[in-house]
Length: 299
Image 1: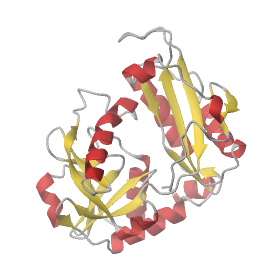
Image 2: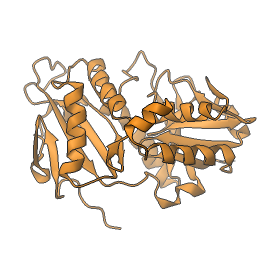
Image 3: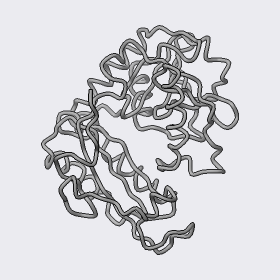
Image 4: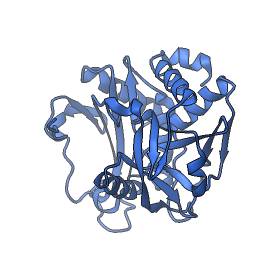
């Protein structure tokens, strides 16, 4: 299927407080965010016209900016309302939502104290990251790049610059015939895939790495809550790389990936089982509830 370039589409993008035609949302080549990765973003999904966990995503966007040393010049209420209105303006009910904030053109050097902070919000139709075949289980290679230590980068933020090693790792994995890559952290312990958190089933219990140097995903936390609601045991801990072969099930969780089973990590083979299947069904049902229904469930 031919790809549709993102700069040549119909629709509208919210940009610094107003909606403009999609094709007019252009960035100057000397923007600080382009040269120095001084940008943060969110990935959100709308189902049946409601953006899932919108308030949490907006709060994380604002906090990510703060961790990069800037304040987004809009309140969380304004940002959330703009995300929701972007769906309406573009005639979408099931969609991917991408707010992004970045430093502008006033300075182009490592120091960027005088730069203006911009915010844009785009929405588009985008199915699951791994496509219609995800239920068969995706295949992961092992990345040579590692997630950095938390004292070397703002690892708690959804910062654009932190995704460079994810892109490198995913490209290498795809070249080897895999769908994605499993990344270790700076200590050599299990971290995450290039854009989703990972869960392992050991002896009937769900184990997931403690997010000390990578993003504590909103979908990750949601899946953990769903599992506990079913009285499943969930353990957050350091997971050593040599533990991966003994897992009976493995799955990924993220906004783009939703809940996706894993069929292999390098030479280690897995079979999607009852725990993964149950959480997929629970998550798929949850995201199609109204925000009020989700709130009442407490997940």
